[in-house]
Image (cartoon, rainbow, N blue to C red; front, side):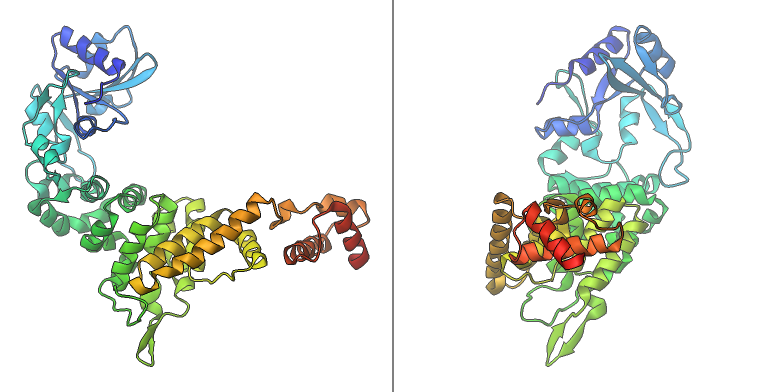
Length: 440
């Protein structure tokens, strides 16, 4: 296992030297057992909050979480969270305990945690305290609730998505009773804030096991994205496809790099298909599904409180994922100008979409590769494809006699068009001469 930070070790030793029990617990122990480096460390102790403060009286202390037994101590400028063993009361909002009761029992503290793999305690030397079999579940790649899964999910409904997220990210299976409880309690997700759901959903999509999780738990995802449910078992009736819409979507997600915007775009790229489906000569078609799906995606992402950049990027990727780009330098330049920073993401989505179709059509990725090569050459040769690269700007045009207004924009766009077509060189004097001759 990886060594714990010296600041954490210092906190554990000081608590024990003062007569209290103290362990790291939760995700940090799980990650260490998996051979990963934890992002943060949580310490649990038998010391009451006021006793913890006394132990660290010579350190700076932050009391923001003291209501729930957490004292934050700054050691070498690093914030270390130390929480008293506790028993949670009722969870009337399915999210947070109404109150907490402190206890001197590590076992009772571990019993309130979500999954067995997150209920393992350890000292700084790697000595494990594991009351609920979490170590074996990690070895066997199993996600299991501590105690009754129905109780755990009723306490905090976000745990439903956390279980699915861990399954996706860690490639673990969810054991049967926990899985049944997920489906039995999925409607509780309606009590959880959009922001928290969005955070977990993004992590689910970015997991290495996202395809299987999407297929297995689409009914859970459908609680907060009901628009995705019609994709399930929707036969595309088209020779390009061997999967239904949901299966195709899941494979597209798997085939694209695990970046949030790309995975979200892959998940939503065909969400408009069920609404636009019609049969012509026995073959299924989805004309306009990209535009319909883009609008749906933007509405859903707004509802889930995603930021504007994510919403706009996903909208554009879904809207144009089915657009064909002509294999000509001028056409590629126009596309690069139109889509800006997401141009290469669009190619990634096209490639992933193609790989999720019937195998005999996978060679279409070669077309995407050729488009990418043209674009890379354009960039490498510093060829002009956007207004900001044009050798003249509005100020230059004003200096030669243009009046501020719409005409300047029209002129610059005309110049860019001529440069892209190869009819004008991107030379300042040449462009100014052209502008004066045509517009003044």
